[in-house]
Length: 398
Image (cartoon, rainbow, N blue to C red; front, side):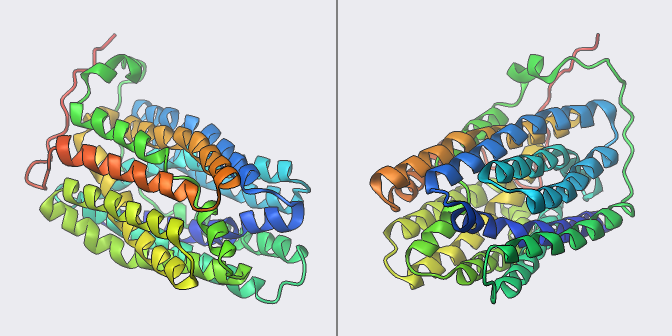
């Protein structure tokens, strides 16, 4: 579990750096470059989707090579390049380029990092392990957001944003230094003797394919968090207050990730995943119907509940039912599917906002989440810690 804590601390510092920047990107785009919601959706969608193409290949290379630490390190180092790119960006196109760099780094590191969490966890506490990592990850996010709030309180112009971009480099470097202390569990893999994973998709567990489909469906209604921040601003919150709302979301998610991860170990992943999708539907309905700042605040609080119920639990579930030698590939495939779906999701959200008003993208997202929850409720089997059998798949050898 110590290795899980170290991985969590790397994410802690990395997310301090990332979240000092992320919540102000849509605000910076609108203030400095006059970007519309549709343009912001396009930027976020392109960045997420292009980067997500790397996630499945990163996972596949991790499984094939057997060395996770160097791949993950490259991904974290890319986050440092992202902050530097933001400093020199002089147009919305420059911001797009910087966002792509950031998401590429996430695409590279996500699968190998998650496999390292799996390798470092006790067999019956996978949900707890992902919960610990998620809690530290979200705690770093909360710290980063709070620092962003403090530094932007007296911002007089857009130059203050670039000062914040510069300061965010410091925790990114600390995260890279922390990464050097992680010990990788070596796995012996026969190189070049594995068929490409896509030749074995038909042999994968039906429950895994079901969840990947549901994740795709759900994500089509789950647009970028940038739209939540813009929605808060649309009901009268100032820029620094919007950042505080995002802080509330991250604090709630951080506090609840470990207990909800442990709960999924006891009662099974299905109950948490179905409940999480239902909570998301309520959250988006709140954003859609909000006419007061109180409703927006309550929606951000519930959004923290949703994040704690889903993020770590779904990774634990995918790791459990994936073939042992395709664990990184399947975690990467899930991230790729979700990321690719974010392009049409963000485009749909931006177009709905511009064409039918601020409520419409959230009504759409609420409906999609309910459909996803219903499919899982009807067709997903419940697995508890007493039944952690991975899906059996025969991987032909050349």
